[in-house]
Length: 524
Image 1 (cartoon, rainbow, N blue to C red):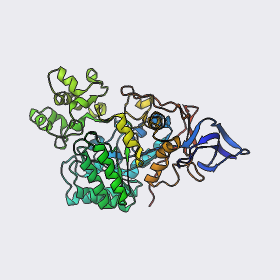
Image 2 (cartoon, one colour):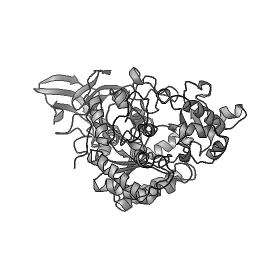
Image 3 (cartoon, rainbow, N blue to C red):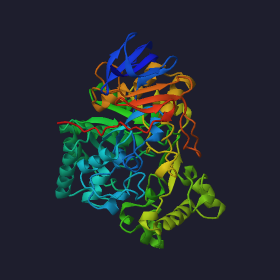
Image 4 (cartoon, helix red, strand yellow):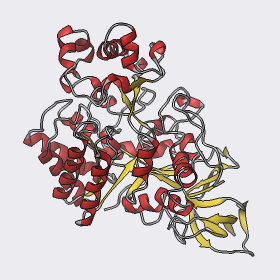
């Protein structure tokens, strides 16, 4: 007897092939048959007539490293049919860790509910598996934690012994099962890393068959040259290259077109290269990234020093480089009267500038004990829907959440990360219905087979015999995001059923309470 039979659905198998109405059979967590199975008997039979049956969606760019420990239900992801997340992106992540106090600043969603009491990547992955995530998870080794473990937050190249130490930590993480290496070169902990250092680390990842995923050094002025650097580093190291959220935040003067042309040229000369893009019209980050590396040893002391504040104004941070008028403070427990407005606008009304207001918010933040501290988050307005259509229409582009998994109830109920509840649903609706840039079959392929192939996964991302039973069943016309900029924690609609490794996780639009996710580890 079969474990599961999904009957009569419109199967989009992930290959991009035309849809066909047929059945899907599952046994022991794997797909055992795809075809009309009129006489088959199963313990669980689901009528999928009128619904799409697709492989579970793959989030190639997630930051759920910590939130999956706090609440492993991954509600925001499961509600969109997401069954696999790649964490450790942008140089951020939960391992390796030498000094927990230093490492905490390099972890999205950190709230001190789970102590950072592990060191190496393998120990972290063990903890994650013990938590029992609802989604499958694979990790990259984050460069920000490598540098913090060895250099602290130092705005300089690593010395030869320090580089050897970082290479050893990276090699250890890859041996522990990580699938590659990521950088966040725009962030304070990594700004001092030169090409030679990155190439040396990339070579370690390349020798292990790992991916090099990079959040480039500049995404405002000079963004095109930063993409050139990413390609140069990956090419010299012989690594597979994944450029994170490719579209520059400054998209005038043809920078988007030049960025895409660089990808095409690299691909044409034989490089294994692709890229991803989040689905927001803005970037999201911590306000505290305005603080330079030289001030991160004692941020409060420097924020209370008039001389240090003058120096910090000259630091070309990810936040302030494009001006304070495009930087919007999200809801904040202490500074709610400034929330949902641009910092530039709020500051002008009080007769001061954006730096003054930002430093005031950060001083209040750092005066709180670490256990009670809630870092201020900002959005940076950057894109238009037409620019999104341009980049998502490129055949090498994959969508990613660039967010942490969340839930509207439980320990993460008060947390916000734009994109968490919306990215896959928004992408499908935008590409298929709103802009008609892809067929439903093509959109599903971009969300499944394409990222699986990029990641080197041979048994996920397709509905085919022998593949893992990660399945999503949804209403093709009703599947869409309900989230808004200032009300982002709204579950997507239209997803009916989700199985992860054959485990029913969403049934008739409701969580079952079962979690079948696995922590995937790269094998040697």
